[in-house]
Image (cartoon, rainbow, N blue to C red; front, side):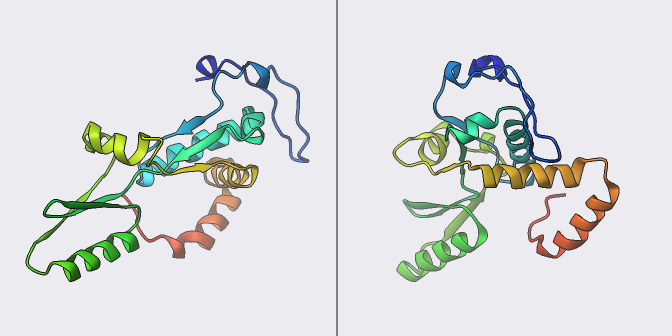
Length: 179
């Protein structure tokens, strides 16, 4: 990935927020839109957090320059006859189902849950996640990347007490645990 981006990497932030020098040269960056595209499930979220942490710690200038984005693939395909819509969370799915049933009570609504990008056929992946005219991208900001880095540090770092505190504080917010 570092080679493909072409700008090198380096530097890191210490506890005080001071940045050590590295070999990153943002002027050599080959791409001005770097898109992280992961599955919409828990595993994809974990991979996204790891990548955001890497960029935040080793290539922060990519974030500061506004070059880093997250692609938002749908979790569901909801269809009724020839009509289809994509939902990005459970609430949106439920609203689409309700609307479809209201519009046509006699035709069955089918729901397809995507466990990963590989479950979509190429046309669906293009239409929902890759087509520049229709995809949804979120630009990564320092705030979102630093939250990811902090979360990763809490969950994967060596401070057991910080991990326990984080889990106890956030466990009540878990809605969809993919085990």
